[in-house]
Amino acid sequence: MAGAIIENMSTKKLVIVGVILLLFQAFAFMVGGLIAPSPTASVSYLASKCVDTSKYREETKWFMPWGPNICEKIRTFDEAKAKRIEANNIVFAVHIPMQNMDMSPWFQFMLVILQFDIAFKMHNQIEEGAAVSIDVGLAYRDDMFSEWKEMAHSLEQKKLHCNLSLPKTYENEGRYYDCDHLPFMELGSVAHKYYLLNIRLPVIEQKKINVGIGEIRDIRLIGIHQNGGFTKVWFAMKTFLTPSILIIMIWYWRRITLMTRPPVLLEKVIFALGISMTFINMPVEWFSVGFNWTWMLLFGDIRQGIFYSMLLSFWIIFCGEHLMDQTERNRFSVYWKQVGPIVFGSFCLFIFDMCERGVQLTNPFYSIWASDVGTELAMSFIIVAGICACLYFLFLCFMVFQVFRNISGKRSSLPAMSKARRLHYEGLIFRFKFLMLVTLFCAAMTVIFFIISQVNEGHWHWGNHAVQVNSAFFTGIYGMWNLYVFAIMFLYAPSHKRYGDEQSSGQCITGDAGANSGEDTQLTTTITHVDGPTEIYKITGKEAQE
Image (cartoon, rainbow, N blue to C red; front, side):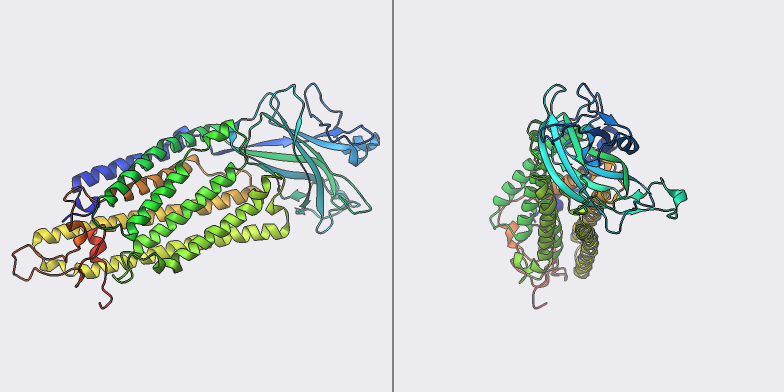
């Protein structure tokens, strides 16, 4: 009987295919573990204290901490007091990157974290709910001799979260507070070689601006960017995998269209999964190396969200189509209760992303983590997303259990068959169960990857900038998604054997022709004219009256 490749391919060939896919999976992990460096790198910067000697502030004037046009600097604020330099005339200057180095478009993005060094003073303590007003400007240039060009300018407020572990006494004056890191800046592309940050802390006592924030002695920045070596490995994987998935997708749909029956819902969803995989694979990031596309981070998040939605929805429909009775099968509307929350959750993630990275397209200093309400909302969102991901996996495990139980009920009819046919159907059931277990494994790894990615990104904002995910995990999971989608389209493609009416006839599974010894047992229990890609799909369907 004609069907899908997963049924008609010999066990030997299936094992060969499985081993090849397993080798590619191992290779994907090894690419990240042995070839690619860590996904991100962090560099610490100490801001130089420059003095603005001009009587009136010049917006076009930029202060360089080193080089031929070095600014007039002071070492400490005690020196500033001795020279009667006011706080409003002090500019904290940071050049990115370090001296004798340059940035590269291969870095893809740049995230900057801010940390204040605040000394304890009895007469100048940090007040409850204190916030720092920061006047910051960002400039860029592509050589060491050009004039600096302004890229962004903003006035931001950052709430301080500082603790002093020692008693607040005169003996402990000069000890430093333990202050949380603050999100400061995020660029969606690194198109220029050199960046310059000029930071002012304007003091206006009448308006209580920068009053009651303690004695700030230094400003430290932590720059985080993607490693150029990892970017090249990542782009190479995308470039290789895009045509692979595209070719198998076209081949799969061509085989579907050659059948005499119209495609069923499961086949359409498999094709949609291939489209979403191709969409996320497309190496459009190559253009970000030559163009200043600051929206690439947002676009990447959107592509990732679409793929997540399609993959999670596919698993629900894949299991559901092996549980539904014949009156409910092949109808997408039946799954609105399961797919609806997935789409809604993805839409919420999109809105959350737009609230931060969407705004950062015009103001790179904006962060939803800057306010208490935004921080609580962001953290709650990440926690809820993680819990929902775990609940989804548990629900998927329950659906797989139901599918297995459904198959076990049909399996009771096997002993009445001849030995050859019984072994044939037992082989089909084993292949399907193995594929379901692989699906569960992929789902578990996807959920783990999603949670770790969210926590990892959150830690940059929470304060632990050193948290990283190994490159092998990124490349391995990405390779796993591609191999899984490739395998599903290959195994569920119609077999080339005996195209024709038999593919869509859906006849009942009976004993050998001419056998009248009670082997005419129907596994599908009165199902007639059942359309589907595989025999397992047909035998798991239950009539409404059953």
